[in-house]
Length: 498
Image 1 (cartoon, rainbow, N blue to C red):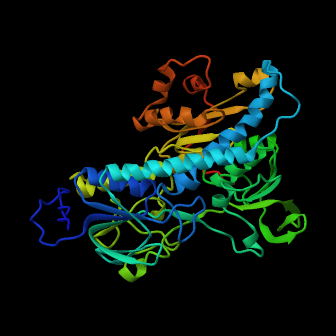
Image 2: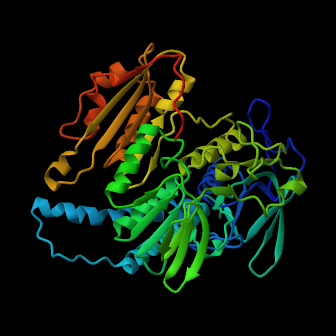
Image 3: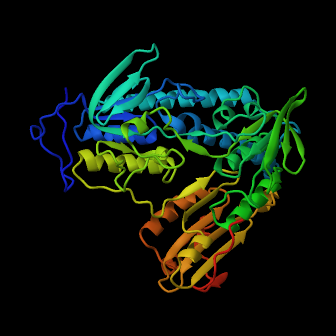
């Protein structure tokens, strides 16, 4: 039995012997994805006795299968990025001809080979995550966990055996799962889980959704030669991003051959001899080998028994937490997508780190959600940090300056590809502080990571201007944008989000 330690009011930990209650674990974590693994490892490094449970491994998740590593490693960021790399080579090969590479007229693509390599990689990473837990001294249990009391977790193993463990602290880190719109024939469609493990590459794909996942899979399948129809409800994809950059992504998708269907929704899916007939609310009938639902994800809380224990959930089932990731039950905490705060893998890692520092490291550490960069791995990618133009206008106390640069990447001048890169800086006119940055073009995520450091440090436009650029590079445009594209007065109303 482990002697628990409690967090005092000032954030310090009690010493052994100050609390007479004994528990099996100081911490028990439900969910071994990015946030859960980070929190458990760091807590163990601080001296806590930690247990963690996760569902058995499988590339396609369900209520009873999952795997150590979670969504990002097994059926999210990592395998998706591998497919993006694979799809990008199609355009690279086309561009190579004007650089002197003599290619035959027909270049074949072997989907099954890439799929095998992808699966090998996620299997490898699954093993690495297990070793990380083991090396930190974290006890891993394979099975489904649920909370049966403020300090008690029950784990149901594959054979149905139920094991019960007590813990001073319980951490929920079960992430989210893809949701399906309730339309006739919805069982004919797949989610991103299945899309990453298809046995055969579709020749015709219909993608429903306008967010990250929809745009990324549209790019992937189109890059691999499929006919792709992208259906979304708004005028532009990627709602919530800067409107100007959304328009750039839309142009690039169309330029690469994706058929866009804005202000459209699917009303019916019908199985036919020729595949799946996808019927829209405009009366269109699109034939597809695969229909992908990329219409958002919901927190994975249904089978955790939270209501019975009294843990508060919001209207979509997300766990409600305070700024320290603590629920209304003092011994129960939650991090990552299950809380529906900012659903990004690095954010779950941050939240897990702060949790461990606060509860077991004697440091009152709170997640900082300011200036978190992110990327949409479309082809080419979009990456942003800080405020969009619309957000800056809405939050502005004074005038806003907008700097933009649109240019043909040097590589395209030889390849002949007609695809502009676009960069954008949002600046507070009074303080000269850079409030936001955006880029759509090759290497945007790699560039934006560095820009995020600058914004985190409170960089001004003058400091950007005084920085010497790397020439020739696309990144140097961020330090050479001298002319104001437009100035927006403080009393200007935000533009309508398209």
